[in-house]
Image 1 (cartoon, rainbow, N blue to C red):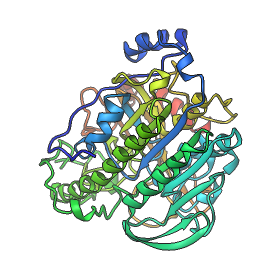
Image 2: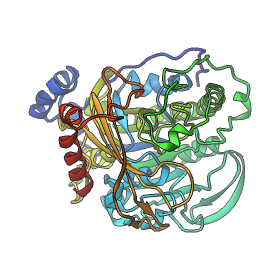
Image 3: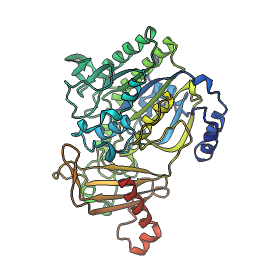
Image 4: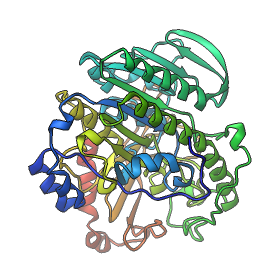
Length: 471
């Protein structure tokens, strides 16, 4: 396994080579690589692919330095999606969207306490297992999930109670504490699962989900003092004037120094994730299964680095819901190293996997397969406040496009089951021109007149956001 270089190497990526007509349409909307992929033969992907889904925890974009081996594989030999998002920037709702292909207002897991509200019959693992796939889960599952409860529709599992060292696990139904660094344990459990492919001819689905880079972002001992490249912030860190922001942001106290310390810990914790991904790649190569394995790598949500004084997730600002997003499938024509500029999200993962496996898409999914030409001009991103206390953000929903973002905050909150109550009254609004103001420094609705709002197209955006939330 290669050592981590001191600098990152950028990878560009590519896409599946069938659905010729669809690819031709998408070429105009996304990248010229689609037109090239359209000529690839469908016969290479005739057999059902293995599926490797890697979901990191609280990993924002701009962390490539810690993942050179991952990017060498999935970036240089796959597709880099440059506009990847989490439809809800919070762990359990996001992961439930990964499993179901649904927005949180459809799957019901609106907060981290409501994991048992997920309808397990809607999950991608259920559909894959029913179709004859061998299924395995290695790492974090869902927040608030009872460790003693076995995860449905997985044949093998090493379910982690989130921690970095000496953690408690549910290993195939037995709850136990295991010594050692949990990212390494996840790696070894995954490799053992893959080894069985030498004698078990069924296609497999491995859901691999390390705790990095979640707080406390503890690195493995060998990376505890690894120097990381300096970072001196971005224009939103700090933001000089936050008078146009909601109250919780106006009262934010996070500093550049806070962000630098967090970023260092996050990057160091991700170095072990990169080693695990490299080991998995080596194993797939040794098994002769690298070509026909569909690999998707993403984060469950992003994280702000003191942007607007906020050092967390759960907010509508870009660093909290933008995530790294990679895909590779050589046998499906996705190995050339290209980029895809479509707006994509975690709700697209389940439809993509089912499409690759040849399993009919179930009713109720909100996402779309990334293997075809489908694209969207905007994405619904939303988050719910749990309970009525605290000083953080109110429940909000946002219309996110490449060139603009419109957000509404509401008088709404959820209980531990995810049920919503409140008046629903709009309490605050934000609109950003992401072309001229990519760091979201100027809320154009602050003190705007009705005529100015009309000129910005706010009534139409508000109507579309209402339709998205109701849809």
